[in-house]
Image 1 (cartoon, each protein chain N blue to C red):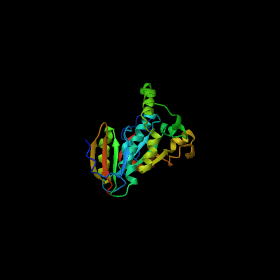
Image 2: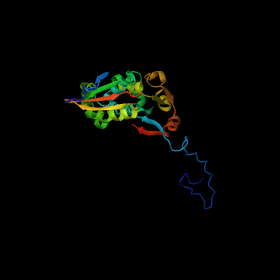
Image 3: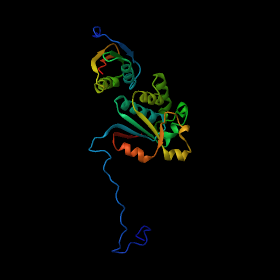
Image 4: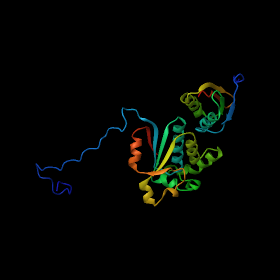
Length: 82
Length: 171
């Protein structure tokens, strides 16, 4: 059951099937295109990225909104904070 | 005269020549703050190791680290213009895995090592330098290499930067 319906996502990137460091790279590229305050979601099925993505978001100083498990993949959501 | 020929030992009480002044071993920067940088010596030219190096460089770049990639020996051979397009070399001990690995990477649309490096440069500060000595040995100039290679340097330049990097690797 997904809890993302109340989150307004500005951009969603489907990185399912690509693996480390693919999803993280997609997240970084996606963040670059958003204005501050924009919400980005990345879909990933790769276990390495599950660790890398929150770590990068923390490092880059953005707001981590959570990891929402779906069927066979996870939706990572973050808001660009700066 | 002082025993280097191993046949005439130095006579007892002989004066040995003075040792040269030792080089300063203090780090170049103040305090013990190391630079937010990963230095990689890329000696290998097999696709398996190039891939590993490219992913490490990408990870470092993704986490905001500077990356210095110092190509030497087979690393330089692998960066000759267009070489990456036909390079299928794998480490000898695991060469039987070579075809399987290539096929799996292709089937899963995994980016190649060159694609990883280009991506790393896109998102971070990745500098690629070629070892002057190897270039001399192979009779190569910078224009013989892929344009992704920024410059030719000597080992001392690499060491001066690597001594301050938080992470140094030999691949």
